[in-house]
Image (tube, rainbow, N blue to C red):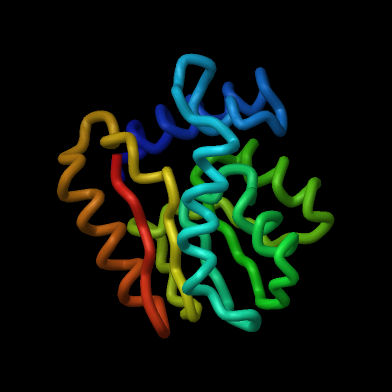
Length: 157
């Protein structure tokens, strides 16, 4: 992703975190029709495919809500999240009490660590500004597939 696009997207989410903190509005803004209930519906569907000890990479993890959802269901696997928003990453690591979330652009940076399951839920919704959005999403999905040991789960708005 071009630096100007990454900065614009990162600033967008950094501002949401500054304004809304741990609220779901930090993920999509106040005008989005995205609720905790909708999020949990998606998580409950994908959690059926995640085994107890699977390692999970959450691409565009936001506030690491998937991690908390899985832990509430007695999941004991390894969670890692990546996001392009430094404020989201900082908020996650403070909330989790550990450094399991990193500020990474999975396409542009040399991310090579494999995980059993690679997911991206409600993150592939914005076409990067000044980019060929369809091509960028294709690159993200291809990279997710390349680093998954078992399978990749994602949704696209």
